[in-house]
Each structure stands twice: as structure tokens, then as C-alpha cells.
Amino acid sequence: HSARTGFYHLNRIMEKGRGWLPGNTWLTQQLVDNVNLNSTCNAYWDGAVNFYKSGGGCRNTGEIAGVFLHEYGHAIHDAQVFGFGVGAEAGGIGEGFGDYWAVTVSNVIAPTADTPCVADWDAVSYTATTPHCLRRVDTNAHYPEDLTDRVHRNGLIWSRALWDIRLALGHVKADTLILEAQFDFAVDTTMPAAAEATVLFV
Image 1 (cartoon, rainbow, N blue to C red):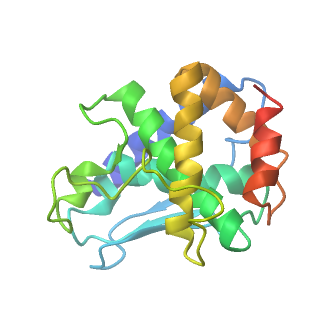
Image 2 (image 1 turned 90 degrees about the vertical axis):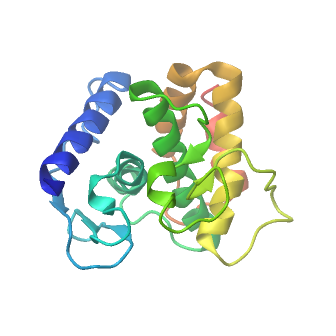
């Protein structure tokens, strides 16, 4: 069941991306979807072998669209700039884009009342506060004062920037320019450099 659910999510994601950037081959790579590898409450992208891997703990991350969408954000970066995410800032951009991608695609396919909340159904298993969110894309995290050595924390800075673009331009224009800009990122890009590359497409 998990594999079938994962396959469905993966296909919806790829169809959406190809619709935005027709003619590009960045989403044609073959991906291997490994679900329920163990009982851990985690999922991750293994770019070296094009594997999406998830454990069966929590609420089974292999069946959750928001988790798939986030991890596939890493696959997108890898397809555009192989090996992307070197260092705390580029790593944060990867995590922030993954969160943003989860939110923006979910909002189009299956909207929720709290759009900026990432992977709300999954987060019920490990959060006590309401709403239950893995993370949010509308925090007040700001560069450079909130920059740390933790990529998921740094991701809050980047996802908020992308969220602001979406609010200003709408999801179609925002998502298209965000995807286009990422082709020009370096594997170890800084947030100012990535922001400059993104602004060029506005």
C-alpha cells in the first residue's frame, strides 16, 4: 500500500513540474522509491543513487504527500545542480525549498485551511502544539541574524523568502521563476547569491 501511495504522489509531483517547464528534462530521471525500510520516523533523499527512502514509524512517512513533496524538492535540486547543498547556507536553501515545494504543490492539489503548515498530518505523531506542523514557511526567520549551522533551521529563512514571492506573484509565476532560477545555483551557493539569481527571473 505504501509503495502504491508513494508512486501516486511521485507522479503527481512530476506532472506538475513538467507542466511549468515544458521541454526541460530535469524531471525525467528514473527514481527509486523505497518505503518502510525500517521502523524509524524519518524520510530522506539519497541523491547518489536517486533513492527516496522512508521509514514506517510515526504515521508512515512513505504514505504522506507533504513528506514526499519535501524530499522530492531535494531531487529537483539534484537534477538541476548535481550535488547541491554543500554547506550550511546551501543546505538550508535545500531544506527551505523542500518545505516550500511541499506547501505550494499541496495547496494546488489538496488545499488545507493552514497552507503554510508543512506535513501537518505527519506531525501529529511528534508535536504537542496545535496546529501540528513539521515546520512552517511563514516564520519570521531572517538572514543573516538567524543563520546557524543547522540546515533545517536555516531552511526557515529561505522558505519564508519563497513564501513571500508566492504571496506577491501567485503560485504559477512564483513557482516557475523559483524553479528556473535554481538552474543557476552553485552547489555551495549562499543565500544572497541565490536570492540575486532568483530576482533576475521576476
